[in-house]
Amino acid sequence: MNISKLSFKTSSLAALSVGALLLGGCSDNDHTSPAPITPPAVTPTMQDYTISVTNLTANQPMSPIAVVTHAADSLLWTSGESASLALETLAESGDASGLTDETGITELVSGAGILMPGASEEISLSLDSTSIADLSVVTMLVNTNDAFAGFTGYDLSSLAVDESMVFRVITYDAGTEANSEAKGTIPGPADGGEGFNATRDDSNKVHAHPGVISSDDGLSDSILDASHRFDNPTLLIKISRTE
Amino acid sequence: MKLNQVTKLLILSSVISLPASAAELEISITNLTHGNHFTPLLIAAHDADSHLFQVGEMATSALQKMAEGGDIGDLDAAVMGANGVTVTNPAGGLLAPSAKVDSIMLDTGDMTHLSITAMVLPTNDAFVGLDAWKIPTEAGTYTFTLNAYDAGTEANDEIINGGGMSGAPGIPAAPGGDGGMNATGVMDMSSNDKVHIHPGVLGDTDLQGGMSDLDSRVHRWLNPVARVTVTVK
Image (tube, rainbow over all chains, first blue to last red):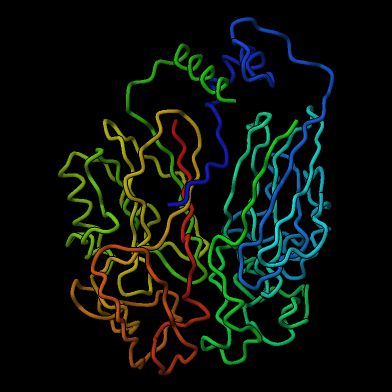
């Protein structure tokens, strides 16, 4: 069982009845006693985060890592539901730029470039303390038809200064393109084929990726070989709050 | 935030006095697989000493029935016999790939741990499982994922022949109507007869023959195979 407790919410009843107290208790200082209630700071300050990502796969370069902040109800995807056009585009071509057009998205910070297998990268994120949002990190496994890895909807407000959170994420299938593995259908270096295609010829529901088969394992017209196979997790992500 | 959490707890307990263990749970389960169905689910709240299954241990005959044929009756009876509480078949049948069953309500009473099982079809004896998750006493929403296990009771020959009774070789059915026929069978060389993480299915691309009646393009999976959300009220 992989526990990833993405969100914690006190019951709304409790939150309502103790709202005023919680405001005092939610200052950024870990060590003040909760007894003296100080009013919340009114001057916005910057909160700084470092997002460190490592590509755990054998031979699946990843498209430039997309670090996205968004409203809590604006998840980038939900398992069992259809992918947005922006997510489809990312999962099929590696182009994350369309995510900024989605409702509730506040910021998109992209990695420097392709993240090669075994490589790590640190991406900085600085947010106004008054606009702390949910965080998502997502990228395409480029030697696939429409596989992507990441998480969506981590509540940044749950992270205090000098705290960090580690995710070992799984790979999803956008469900928007059949996993044919056929020559000409995969944009990564294994093929150099097509990226985005508006046709949706798979289940049209985001789900956990079943993995690639490869020609070495019996899919005769696959352009992929055994090195392109992957298992979960595929990406290590560490979020550290530094300020 | 550690102190803040403690503070919230203190405040919470002063506002609402909760019984020591009774919890009202609202549960949702999503089938994350590409092309596998789950048979009727069993969700059980039980005490700290009970298990539906344990990795590294031999499957009980009740677990074997579930894993090889999807029959949760004996597991359910075992939980009830130990004064546990269950929800059976919340999806009203099979849970299809990418399907979600939600709003499952479970009053745990005195029970402290939660377990979930269902057979993964089409397979010989794979099941999705949660083994004795300690139910948090802190109200909130908890999300986690589940892996697929091999009951270790039947060779994974990948032949669809209707065999769903305990001890009968073969796979009962491919509910998606996407299985093959006439497979010669995969030679399962595993000698692990304990419950273990399932190695996944092999499959092939020959629906009229070949080694496997499973389709490698449809029926393979990587763990995890299910996502569970539990809201502790």
